[in-house]
Length: 129
Image (cartoon, rainbow, N blue to C red; front, side):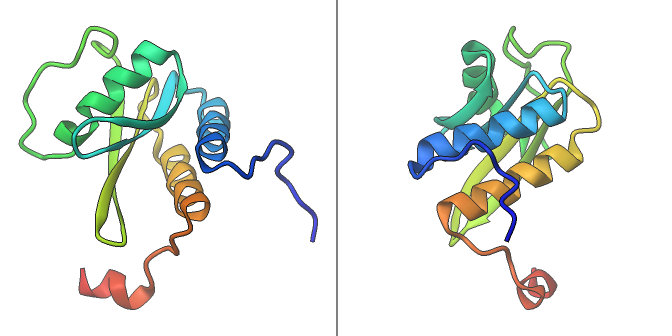
């Protein structure tokens, strides 16, 4: 099998950062992050202050009723957030910098699942939800 990834790591944190950096670069995004429900940044790619701001608001922005203000580092930017369930735990994959970041976020989500050892939901699970 031909390995397409040239930069890899056995360390999950470093592997997540490499994956997010790849997605950020491919999508020409300012930042891509993984955060948990209290806004704590798990891993990120991009300027540190932007990553921290994005991680902090990602759980809030995933709610359809969010009407709050974005932190200064994100003001006026296009921000996308996806809620991802990993064995009952919720993480948030978010990006800033481009309106059409869907493909990059999906690539990031796939990488997060692979690196953290979670299989994608089966078709049966998708139909139930």
